[in-house]
Length: 351
Image 1 (cartoon, rainbow, N blue to C red):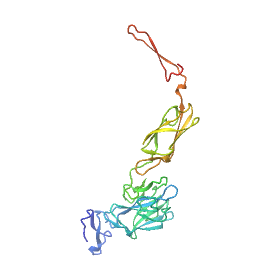
Image 2 (spheres, one colour):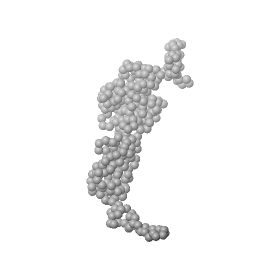
Image 3 (cartoon, one colour):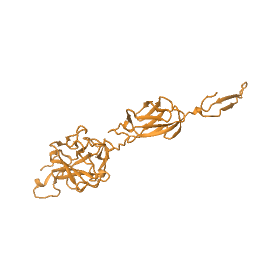
Image 4 (cartoon, one colour):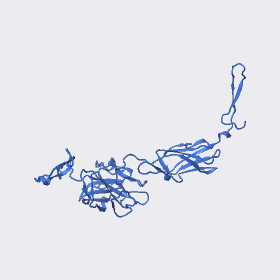
């Protein structure tokens, strides 16, 4: 029995907490220090991230484990339980972990298909629909036969597979690049729907806990409903963040002149479309920005959630009737004449 100086945050602790068999080298062992609290007798490994739902077929599912402890652990003493919570707590698959040493602060990823999941350490079967989609379901992490962590999602799975509550904790399947993740990375207050949040996936790496919202169109010129856009107007599209556009990411369609191509300039946050042909006066034009072809550039790529559509009506200002304006000026210098000058309101048509 020794308090190893290698671990500055460790101490010799009674395990189980408070046990006393009058055998010092049996009752005490080296564990993380917890002064004033229950002794940390179990390994501090947590289920750190789960991606159980993707658009269409679930073919990129994974569970990430994080070692929150100050010690390294041989994972052959651990296993994962996948739990169907819709009718209680029915374990539908147990995954034994391999004899791999997981270092303090490191990550271990279990996936259904390593071809679709970065940093996958253990590829298990089936390749698709590995992890059930909730309402509710849960994942448990066991050390030998002792449950040391559990995450219930889309509701509360029967004890002991819910910590606090899992209500509202949802991997909605709208995006292929989102998961439920502990934020801050590794945090565990035993409250599933507080500790975990919907964030961009980061298998095998620290969770991306900063809010990462999909891009959206934040400003257009002309704005939606503009009644008098010039027939030769450029179209400006500003996004909420830097984006990359690809393929046929926009469409300009007008009631009379039809579809318009354009020269694209600018980026990565503000783009300008200069139509190759002017619009016709008085026609309604609709611009569509296709969300599937717009992706942000920060962290895990996110597409726009939906297409953005706006319309405007074109106007040829020089076809409008107008009244000429004359300005009469008088120069009082000797020898000068009175002067009248013509100042058109918009153009010189008809002069």
